[in-house]
Length: 109
Length: 113
Image 1 (spheres, rainbow over the protein chains, first blue to last red):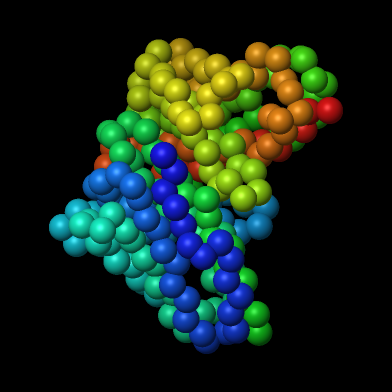
Image 2: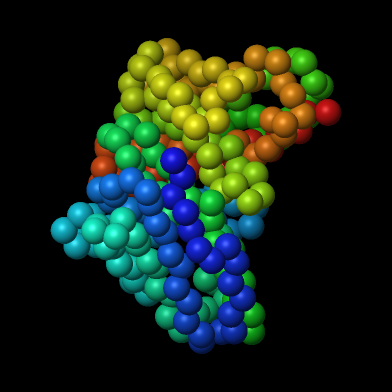
């Protein structure tokens, strides 16, 4: 039931770009993105809704392809503070809420 | 910050003993979730609640039970702890369904020896 994320891990230099993908075998109605710093709880970044509306972060963007049941998170001009593990999350029904397996991002100076 | 606290934050217990983790919220949010986080598996849903006394299973519910007798509290019980339940447990809350974000507690690190 978990969405599938790729890649599992990414290493970047400051200023480089990264794309994290999230795909589902079931229809997606909305997709959430969260970031977790080491030893901390996940924190909400943004939500993408069916129909294209996007709410959330200033410097990180995302797309949502309903037909392909996929979402992608775009981190441009990476900063050291972007390091962490990124999770996508979704509801397949109205109540349950699932997260993907995570993508570990390491931004180096 | 959302008012959500987990207790205890750390616990070491022996195999075969019962363990209860508590999640307390002050936001009056309807939905509460328990996840476990293990390397390579991300956050896996154990149980969730959509109201007082309304709970249901997630994808990894075997060996766990939950209760929600008040809006603010969601308890996760390991009936007889096993080493495979060593993990970090996160509670999360959401106000509504599709379009509302989840807020997480700080996590409970449980070690079963």
